[in-house]
Length: 459
Image 1: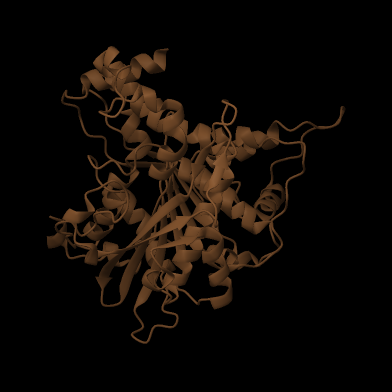
Image 2: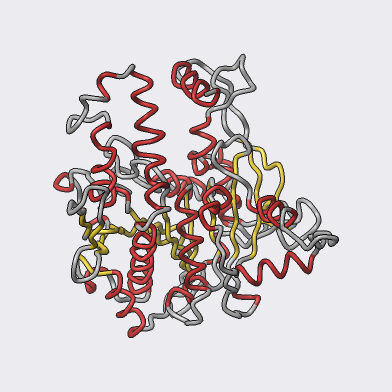
């Protein structure tokens, strides 16, 4: 109740002037190290490579996956636009007009210049997926699962980022969620019940539950596997596109299974992939990668994951892993070389209600384990940490942040919870950190183009 009251206060006071909080990197910890502030990662700029490029222009493919909420809401900025604008600004570039507008979603496509990007839809198999509901013989069906578009950001003559944006919320909302909670949303389509509520209660229910928690609840049920299959199909399609078999050659729509089948047959050679996920997207990404890292097969997904970095913004691993407790032992990851082990970089705002840092979560699980009577829990030492990373298949780096602003300047003990959860990429210094990487808990500025702009460009 106190949290709900605080959120209501936030909305009521949102128009009041408040002081700006400067980004603070409080700690950067590596699971592999027992010492604090010892974390490091390569950074997006240094993941880019030049394989199979005659012009020797370094390229990095970035797979961007969203979390809960109306990602395709036409009243808001398209997915990852703030991220892409932040990357451009880090290099002194400006993005004009509708260059980054989404090719997916419920936007007015007729008003858009579709030549500015390309898109593809990932569908189910030959037949739509059928879900039974609590009403006998009243099933729901779902065919379209994912829409993906591509945005290319040319930084210099030597570097470019290609971002594959994955949209899944609209298809699942229309196919499954609307039938369950759509009668209660505040919209022209169905707003009778919502119209009976007070204004801010109405807004909170939409933002927190109807378009928010319902995503997570749906994902933790049988539809979760279909979401992962759809995202895997999108990864296969992105791998094909990155290897030269472009969306236009794949068709306007392809099934997830078909995309992966073609990808295995084509075996495309691609530049390095990295992954950026938000909120629920972090859990989807983790689960999907774990499935591929433990299936004892080597596929295009394994090759895309190898050597990558996964930047999880406001991760949901600890909270949603409560649904993973099982009577079955944990499957170990494939025995891949240490050098190719992907690294999870979890960026967490300390005031975010929904995020739990990954390394403390893992350590707390370890310390809470049940051991035979008379024995003590083994020490959480370097050997234990390495064993966990090897079995799970990831290295882990936690970055503890603070950047959310107070609601009003005279109440510093309560900061904007929505900003803390979903506005990481609006922080320029955080974008620079993701681009440049870190060594021993500090941003690595050496040879990073994002930190080599003339001083006049920063003013």
